[in-house]
Amino acid sequence: MDGLLSPEPGLVIWSGLTFLILFLLLRKFAWRPILGAIKEREDKIESALASAEEAKAEYRKVQEAKAQMAAEARQERDSLLKEARLTKEAIIEEARKTAKEEADKILADAKAQINKEKADAIVDLKQQVAKLSVDIAGKILSQTLQTDSQQEKLIEKYLNESNFN
Image (cartoon, rainbow, N blue to C red; front, side, top):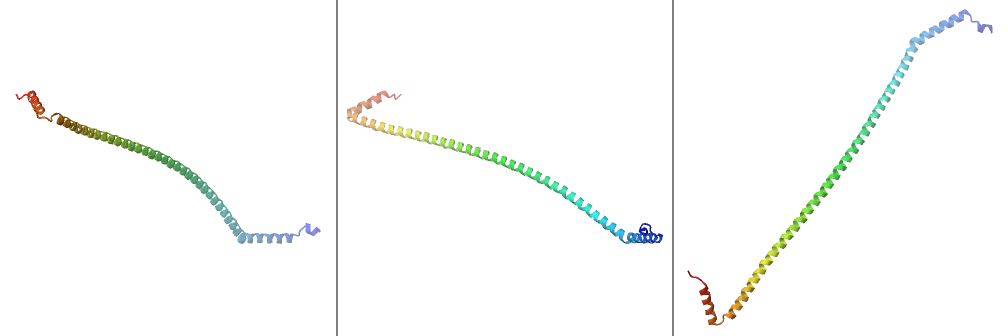
């Protein structure tokens, strides 16, 4: 047991020399490729993290653009609804105005027609009264002037009333 705790100088030299050779060989042939692979993996991880950050930023931008577009769409919808409401009110007001003008025109035409018919009736009535008066006067005169002496007296009377000067 004593041999295990106190190593022999030759064993230590050969073990050290073997370790040194193995270290140099590993350093020359394995260390650089291992470090290169680790560095490459580290770069890939950093690149993936940067891509994830970019994607996150892009997602935020898209969300903001989406929210802005939704706000603009709501604003445009409200604007269109307001414009449609104003157009509807204008159309209703125009229809009311047109209906009132049409009713006023119809009423004025009816009044004019009534006045025309009234005037025509008055003219017709005057003509009938005049015709009737002439007929009555003719009948009265024909009955009163049936005798020659009465006719002569009437002629003399009108001649005396007339001035030939």
